[in-house]
Length: 277
View 1 (tube, rainbow, N blue to C red):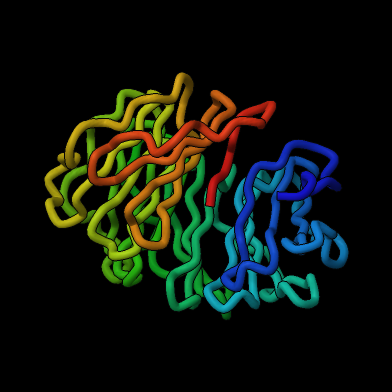
View 2 (view 1 turned 120 degrees about the horizontal axis):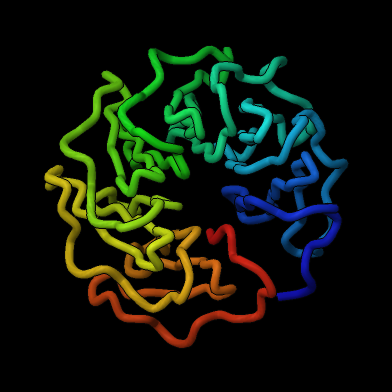
């Protein structure tokens, strides 16, 4: 569909669609966030400047009026998508290492961030204040965070090969760590109904977990087909399919019921596919 969106001067680490589908935001190693018109491919406004290191993750608020970004500068920033200004005046400070992933709560009142400092933190999007204590339990870098559709839980994927689920009200871990991957968990995503959770790993597989079991068991067999690590995953709106992006330069689409590939891999990228949405 059209030409590549060009303007960044270094690798693009993260992309996110606006809720209305009219825009795409991208975060890059050039320290900027850019917003693009999906119809014309043109950049909307000026780059969003403020981070002093690579932008590793971007996420739109549910109403599309704001955007969160995480960075190698250890901060989270919240932006007004109309003006390009930071909504909360100062960066959100607390992490002591790279912020690898950010995610909005379904109601837009909170942002979760996962960091290489081994913690997940939750922030109030109006005040910029951290909510409660950091969510701790992992023994390695946090690679990905995702909210459940009802906002009651935050899930995180880690380099210790596990997926963990947290209660957003109590900050307590729910059940046992989800174990089965044999390498880093690079990405996590909830199904639209919240009944399942998908994880992608450097072990080249996807796994689907039943969120109601809370026993650390995965549902069915791993989805196998990538020849390099799985970096990013996303559910279809009806939950029947999962898309995965990989270091093998392909995007694959899977049937969530059977674990079978749907059609042929989507090819054309000349480097790792870091994000799918």
